Image (cartoon, rainbow, N blue to C red; front, side):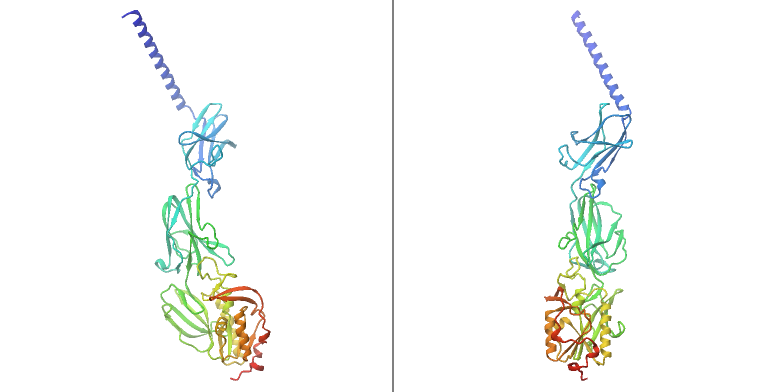
Length: 499
């Protein structure tokens, strides 16, 4: 081996030793950095998954809180999944801690795409960059929810199966917490939340059901039953980012979908005495109110709704009671027959003050909306029946042997019977032009009208397709009627009865 070859081998050996020595230094340095104490203290992230549109304010951003081992100038960066810096977040001092809040905006002010990101802390003096390994997730997209809820359903408290429980299924495209929300609209138009589900779980599919109950309760618990009426059965869906989908989004007429309106029925009667109930059988009782309510029992019938019928009866004013399943309701019955004295049953006035939701829109039927006349009476109609019963009793005490009854609607559509001589009106503010035409014809052929108070015939309304629409406060012109004002006058002049 020549001297030159030996020299080359010696140089190569020295170079290898140098490389090995350098690698050893780098390895020791790396190991030192790995084992060195962290320059940050207790880094904590709140709202790991967030949305700038979250309905709860603290869910609208991700927050990094940390401390420093020694003073330094800290900057917080946002990294995407490719380790690119997309935003710089201001750092503020809160006590002994530093805090950085990111609401999902890029450096140019635009909203970043949904997805995972990471916080990183840059320390200027120490020239170090500490990546926080735990990801944060921006989720600004609400869940997509589908519902199987069907419209125009009716249920009855306490019944089994679909007759007593309204059931539907919700599905979402991501883990979601579904909650049952049931509202009722007051006659004033205010919405009341009456049933809310508690103990929620994360899921992508859930069956919700409502059994006509009230309260803030778990879904498998049934509270006290609600009263008859219409209810908005809706829901609330929240994803992990805090995005919220509400059904209904707004409580306004014709804007309730995908929530649905459910009618709750117990037992009721319409003015035409049609039973409104989901029960298999009911009991009807005819009472004859007088000084006391409900008065004497005249007849009774029991059977399936529509099949239970009361027998014909003599002229008079009656209160019909329907009962079943522990519930009861009332309705009036007017029988005119050939009685010479009739008391007018103010159906128009009673239905004008009835907030029953006939079309199941979720909103009570109140003026100035058209009010369907043949719908169940409002709760409290028994008070009106008792008052009219006392009027009938007072008429009988004035010396009249037989007192019949007739509705204002019947008078307008058919007129008064030829046998009638006197019509007594009390507590009947609502009137129509057609009704006044019939009353004037009655007087023209020798009849007499007795108006017992100053509030009757003071609110004008129109009738169209069996629906009543109030026009406003306007008293009828009763000059042509020459009405009497007291029952004691019914034997005077043309009103003399020959019985």
